[in-house]
Amino acid sequence: IFRDVEEASPIEVFHLMKIFSEDDYPTKVNLTVGAYRTDEGKPYYIPVVKKAEKLVLESTTNHEYLPIFGLESFTKAASQLLLGDIVQRQEEGSIFGVQSLSGSGALRVGAEFLAKHLKCTTFYYSLPTWENHHLIFMNSGFNDAKTYRYWNEEKRSLDCDGFFEDLSNAPENSVIILHGCAHNPTGLDPTKDQWKQIAEIMKERKLIPFFDNAYQGFASGDVEKDAWSVRYFLSQGFEFLCSQSFAKNYGLYNERAGNLTFVLNSTDNVKAVKSQVTMIVRGMYSNPPNHGARTVSTILNNPELKEEWLDTLKIMTGRIKDMRKALRENLEQLGTIGKWNHITDQTGMFSYTGLSANHVEYLRKKYHIYMLRSGRINICGLTNNNINYVAEAITDALVT
Ligand code: PLP
Image 1: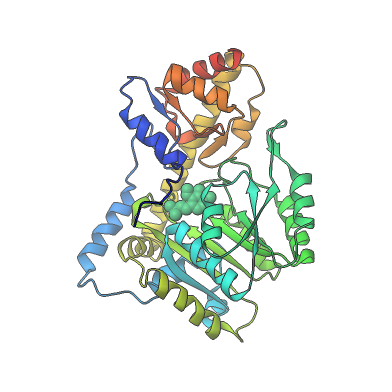
Image 2: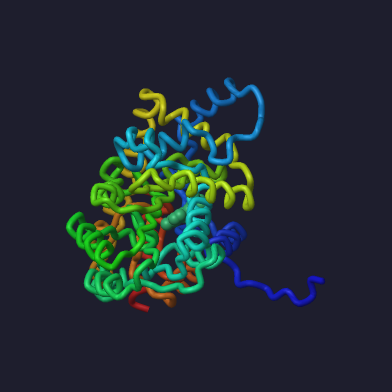
């Protein structure tokens, strides 16, 4: 029965991680992974997360199912982290969260809801975007995938005019995927003024925002600042969806802790909306997992632990900023061809370097430095130990 199954192409980031792990070159460098790394190049087990996990284990008395919508103490605190003081709206019911299988699961449930119950067929994602957006939305029942311009290759900056024009031409009821902050893969976010223009166009064109918030705290180091875009849309009276991932900002990648927030402008139909979300979750995975969500909830609902987590975010983003600065300085000192200000202009974990697929291949073959074909690097893969090596290799690749 399996005879006619065609092989799908490999997923680039996982494929590269595999060949990296098989490479025994002593100075190999991995700039592909979408995860934080310490200056020793190691995964980071955040101390306050470890502390909270201990509390979770000590207070766990059974492994009964969670409600279909997940742990309420988690979804409430997660939506508040995202949207600020929304307690009243949560109490009246016009804003609610659904625990999800990390950010991907939130996008998947949200997209299926939009396709099934709002009859949406067209979605727009930034060019470029995280490569999974397309797959998730197509699997959810959308059939018309469109892009909006975002990255200006020549200037290595945001293509504002292209972005606004594409939004202005989008058909009514299109779903627009917006990265709340720390855009993956470019590391470029709109300014506040640009967000205001985006909101204005979207309101006029009757477009539906779907915020993807996978990096709150990873752009500026401040969770409040990083939530500005989403909160602005809230203040402008939009109805929208927002996915949240706690993979990066808690280092809980494999625990699949996420939240999908629904923002409605009326409580009239909340019951019906919730009932349909229930049906989607029930038919997809039935119940969410406990451990990651309970860990995040323990931290968000305890002022001392939360403070410690916020401090840790500052340390992590501080290291990313230091590495951006060091890479730029190294490249400029070496007289590397091109301008490198974009490395420090960008924020978050990722940088779109502007290196071509040929450069990327050259760097992998000659120097065993791994990055995505698009030239995207994870800044966290840089350390004080390898930064000179990487800068010299890039300099060489650009003259070859
Ligand atoms: N959205 C973006 C832009 C991402 O980069 C990622 C992860 O890399 C996700 C969502 C979802 O990640 P996860 O499902 O691990 O939370």
